[in-house]
Length: 340
Image 1 (cartoon, rainbow, N blue to C red):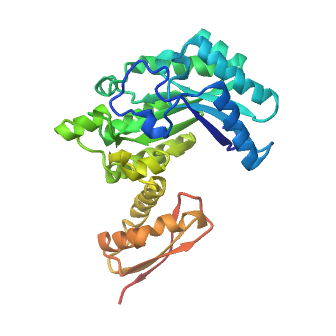
Image 2: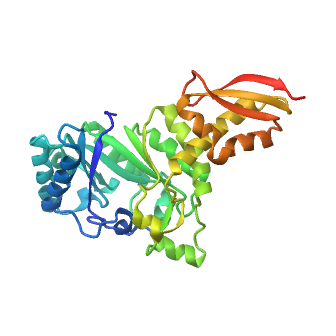
Image 3: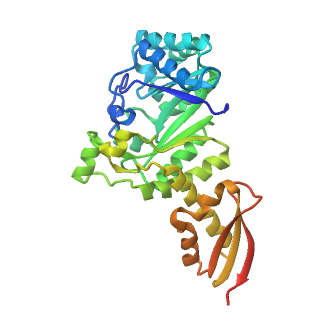
């Protein structure tokens, strides 16, 4: 992956989408009601330049719909506007988001011609039965073939996955993560399911046909997925929906929506690591552990939740957390003293 860029998002809500996924209402998720136009592309770039100036690693990203599924003439109009900004030096790169079944030789030739170098695919699940129950309209084979083609043509590939879709569970999410890793993406996005108002999934929840994937469910599932992708060397570029005023004020009616979901998951990952390291420590001990300076807050947990949990589960007299010269996801024992 290249160095982190400043993203200029241009939303094309539902534009090009041939299916209605049960979880999807892009107008609510993006907060945008009108599809993008060449004029809105220029305005988005100008607004970003006014804020940060040129030479800031700006990347224009078409999000929200299925870009390569919209009519070619509309694709070209948007891509020409983006490419002019690229050729002028206002932005450094372009990416698009699309569906696995909307990628072929012709689509990739068009994207490359206009300067696109990164493609994000909404895989969501690598189990056909989950894709079917979610109304995705494509198969696992589509994900695999599109991913191989994108990589072969020299693009960077980002794969998006979801946890908590209808019929899925934590084991299923880990299965999807493993199948995605086998495709060797340059990065992944993980989106635990959020129930958005005015979606089919909202109706399923109200009828009792869907069990909510709660924040706690998401934290538990992602605390298994995140270490796996870390071990595989695959960057996680987003975990959870980007917080927005609309989602926070009631559009997200249920599910795993939390403005600090990534922090909650990281804290759970550190808790799990510490559990394994401390599991043989004798009860009643006063323990001091060391973690990387960037992980101390996550190790302690909100309101000292992790410390209190470990003291209770392992019957420790006390647990203190210090900064130490260790790897980011490492927990070391500094000292163990038998309690009086």
